[in-house]
Image 1 (cartoon, chains in turn brown, red):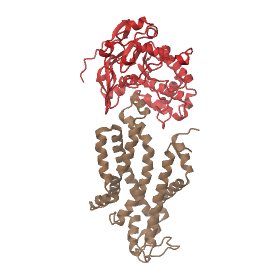
Image 2 (spheres, one colour; image 1 turned 120 degrees about the vertical axis):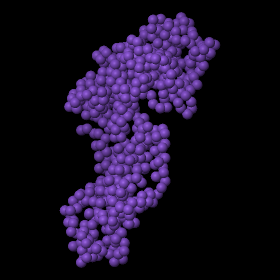
Image 3 (cartoon, rainbow over the protein chains, first blue to last red; image 1 turned 90 degrees about the horizontal axis):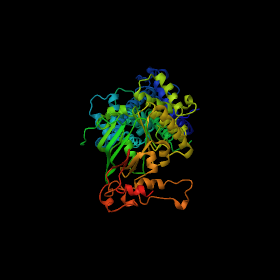
Length: 281
Length: 335
């Protein structure tokens, strides 16, 4: 049987129970988000003033909120928003981070200096403050704006890692060998360096998804989210006023955030160990 | 950069003249290659020998212009197959590398990309220069692997580098280097990191490939045995310069440079007793501040006053035999 790096990583990953569970939870959440209309018919998240603040029971597993919407259904639909925004933010973050990190690490010199000073400027500002400033500059707050803002505030971390990977990978003999065979700079970066740097990008990305879900909920909680979107943050925010009489409105979406964030972190840890050549099976 | 118009009338495949490659470091300018002349003819195997850190590899990397910052080619001419290498654009160089000039490096263990199969990597080398449909690439790869004597190439091309032994990886590297039938193959210490039996196999392979493909080979090594075995002509390099250059027989029988002689004396044979091992005293000088005059004089048994003051000119000592030493005649007589 052929054992490539991917297979070795998979074997190591399976041995790590915690990250396996984390990955499993994420898969379930993603499936839930995908099949939301099947699991929780849209009617359940419509306003129904005849059944507000009902406690958890057989009819409403997690109870209903102040407007009579089913909390469980709302969480399932909220997962769609959370994951979509987090995925968009991650994609943008990776694009930015890889572009900047690759150019800085591969070409070094003055280009590197300029790009790294730019990342430094963003790194020294508290992320959440920067996020609030960027988002509050816009009157219409779409989900894409929130995703873009999160990507803009988060890419420097990943760019730093990509750069350091590139700095060491560019000195590898196989890069010189590729160059001696006539490979162009672009081919060297795309075919030889980037694939070798992919593991750190994946690991960081998994952990960043958790941050994006948290930031997104935080922004919504602060009233800076998309006001019409069905999201975990907005539900927590609404339940805040009823914590004494209807604890379930805030608690269950909070729990959802907690579980998904934890799952992402567990998965990230497991992936990091799995890709690490130094930890043997 | 001021260079004279390159003389393209040369009949040699590769003609390097007055090549200077410097490295600009914080400690100072390292003159790794400081005025090197050499040529390689078509179908010829040319050896470049010298101790570690004498600039051999820098010469090797300068020819296909693979020198990276802080290094730079600051002077001289490189004419290859009638073309002026130093005047080519980076894009033109990419077309020459791998297709006309290719290289085999010292460390086969890390010269292959760990995350692609051997077949994918050789296929990439082929597709960089030849327009071959994807479906035929695998056939070509298998053929080339067969040429470098990898058993069961159809299956072994699906292996990752870590599944190959050191010798097999070097074969795979050679396969990549010859995949486009280059005119010149630069082999930079191709057997240094391999054990002795594998070395012999790789040597045999290079010999047979040379005959089959009629490729010129530039062999960079510190092993005089390899040179005797494989090369037609040889240049001995010391501290960034060529000390002596000639055909292999002449160098081994009538060496006229003290450094060449010392190198040969330092090569142990089966009959050498341990207490008789000859070593050249001292070290290769730092190339930031090379010694005045002849660079070898601090370590030379024949050195006199003039050696410390003036640099010896390159002298014609016989047909195709050049030597840079004030006392060349003395050295020759003394053997």
